[in-house]
Amino acid sequence: IPSDIKDSFWFTKVKDGEPVDLKTDSEYSDRVGYDCYGTSCYLSITDVRESDSAEYKFRFRTNKPGEKYTGSPGVTLSVTDSGLQVHVRRSDSTWLELTCHSSCVLSDRAEYYWYKNEENIETGSSLLVSSGSTDRYSCNLRGSSGKRSPAVYGPQRPSVSVSPSAEMLEGDSVTLTCSTDANPAANYTWYKEDGTSDPRLLSEEPQLVFSSIQSSDSGNYSCTAENQLGRKTSDFISIDVKSVGRTTRIIHITRWTLVSVMLILLPVFCLWTRKKKAVSSTTEPHESREAVEMDLHPEYEDLSDMAAQREDPEEQEDQV
Image 1 (cartoon, rainbow, N blue to C red):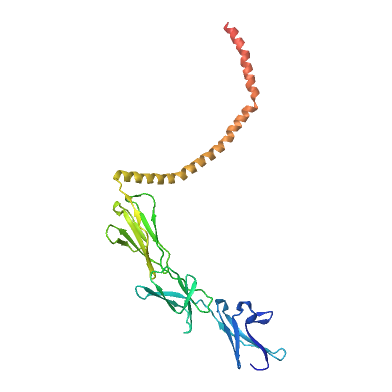
Image 2: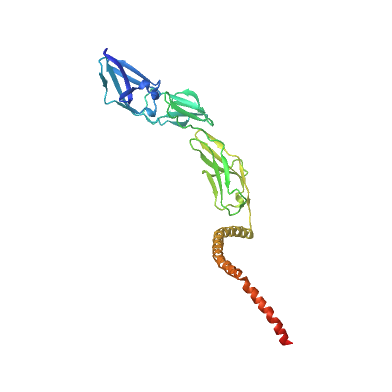
């Protein structure tokens, strides 16, 4: 650096008209360094983050009062997500090779960290693990605070659900669902135990669907979940389908038909009841008004009674 230069620094922000030295910027605390050789000055940033994307400019001041210069345009730095992914390859029947890949173009000197269940275990672009492991493995670039790769892991023991879970009758629609947690996503296979040494393969889908189940479908079922890292089989689930005759089937259908009809008619009945109450409320005021008018003239009723009592003796004398 020429002897007449007082100081120099790099900046991205300007505050109150003055550039802010990166070394005093809290966002770059202990992550930047300056190196000057001859007439060239360099900026180094460690633990690079996406938030570091900006235009960086160089600034220097000389010993002469008011003499300061800024390099323009600056250098634009664009930081993107490394896009790390773990690729799985079977090495042999016992071992799997995990390789860390980035969607970015990296230098040959790039180093990777490997994590097993969140614990840093090794460095290198690849890692050997035993087949069938249920541990979670992920990777990251050394010196990066960016996101790690999504963890890869074998399937847990799958669970089986049955819908509907109530009593099953011949002709019902029944669905068995197999599910587990795994990455990469697991592939599923359904089996039925039929008394032979090996269960019979039924389907290679997550769901086993019986559109019209029969009593012959009764038995023990299990499913297997498998990805590149391992394979797990569920416990057996027992299915018992009740055989029904023609009469029982008619009763069964009639019962559900009646329930459906009641569900349809219930809103109509409620609406009719509500309208009936509304009509009754409009007629009650007329009836009460007539009753009030009658109550307002009770003396007329008394006079009529008195007149009737006076006429009675005369009628009796005439009869005599």
